[in-house]
Length: 247
Image 1 (tube, one colour):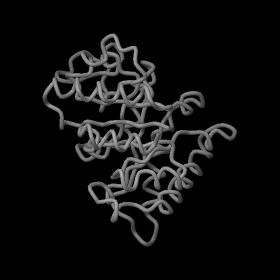
Image 2 (tube, rainbow, N blue to C red):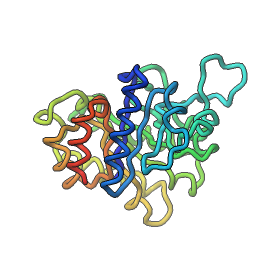
Image 3 (cartoon, rainbow, N blue to C red):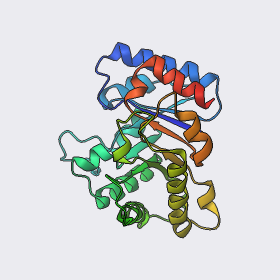
């Protein structure tokens, strides 16, 4: 079970960042699975330095550039050198800032070239009765996989983040049944893209709103392999409660 803590830009104080990592390391010692922390870029190198714990580190995003004359860009090579082993690619907030499906595909290629495991975020803005959102998600996935070899495709982690469910309370978030249907649909797409029966073993995560009150039901009845947690991951007490529900 993957648990990914995406701190976004909520943590601006390095002392708080260290305390959150310490909490994550403590939680990782008492559970199986993979716990990944995605801190803001300026903190990642210092937090990951000399890391020998069960906590892994991820970049929240990477540049599509390979370096050179690209002021302000942080490349896959830089993140790999800083201690990251995963990258979040195609997050809804980065797509809203201009990343297209083609840009996301390029960033995945850059990640894999430096042995970083991509966490590909996909998801619809809203659900229409005609089911056009299904084609939207299919396009996000197929474009991301198009230029990859069969071996590279096996490394991709999918994080489904329906934008309409983000920020909602557990009562109004996605239901376990609806999530289960989407996980099956994503695996159906992956079955067309991955060799053999690998689609059933691919990691599919949920990246919508989760709370201690709904995370266990979502994980138990949907077929997901983990969660991508945003704002709730920067509150130590809430994050601890979420992790304990999945342990």
